[in-house]
Length: 146
Image (tube, rainbow, N blue to C red; front, side):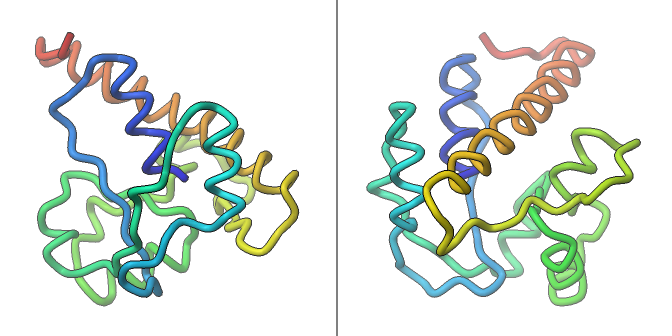
């Protein structure tokens, strides 16, 4: 969901030079997005039909300038397997470094529709924070895309 939501936000902001991609720590290659995630994205006009899962590879971490993960376990596993700990952040901690509450965004897989909606809303709020950081960084560098 996060990939589709951030892509949509960047498109609406006309920021076209950021490559957003999603990988899974335990993903099976080629699976479609879950029905629950597809449904809640569709409700806000985002299609996820072309999405196919891919397991994370070392090259993904090397290529990325920033890696945002949903759960602490993801951050730990990626850093141990592939290195790059300096660019791997929990999404919540990246958006709000002062946050001390539960820093995980819990996976709604297998949950009821309402849980998927809640997760989508949480991700949307967090990704607005990511987008704000991107825009502020670009503005301070004088390279905000338009």
